[in-house]
Length: 249
DNA sequence: AAGATTGGCAACCGCTGTGTC
DNA sequence: CGACACAGCGGTTGCCAATCT
Image (cartoon, rainbow, N blue to C red; front, top):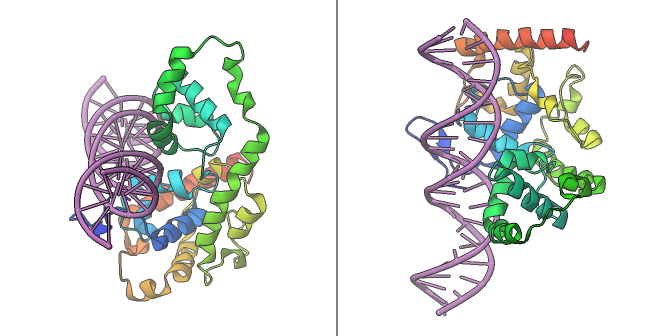
């Protein structure tokens, strides 16, 4: 929530994300995956930069992002990791499943900074230190999913008129029900995505924004008449086919 | 009760790394 | 090998709510 939402001169919106924008991004990624952050926003009907979308997804909307207070164990891991790695937040985040670098960075600056320097002064070489991550029990990890999964579920469930579960043909995509059932979607599930077939995308937009599609209002750009989309689309289809071939999907 | 200050955190900006042509 | 595009990272900003005076 940096600035009140407003349209920039470039046409790109900045500031806080609205529920509607979240819904659009989540729905699009759930259906087509992440294929190109730069071009995706347009096809998802968002007037946001790719960077903004990526950040929003990585830090907030991704199903396995853990929200809420940090546990004692997590604090210890952060303190210890920071003493080893410094401000390499992404490396520290890698030791804390479900936590984002941004969240850890914020938490460090607001809660742990002073303690961190204090700890550094009193730190002794502990033979167990190198394996501190093992103190982060799997039971903690198991709790990671719940909150954010529920949040994303909420977003999707508000779109009562667009339940992808009804689409039996979308077997390769993540649906609301699959989030519900699995709860521990692997990151790479989203890394290899396909924009889908032209029919899929058309259907997607008809479901998501029937009015926008009718009027071509708001920020929606017709992807089917866009050369960038056509190029990216065909590239992505090729990659997707290759991926399916390689992994026998 | 109201204005000032502070803390928390989502989001932006600019830079760097990596892959592709 | 250089240019370009894209993804990712870390620092910073600024809004908003809580707390203080």
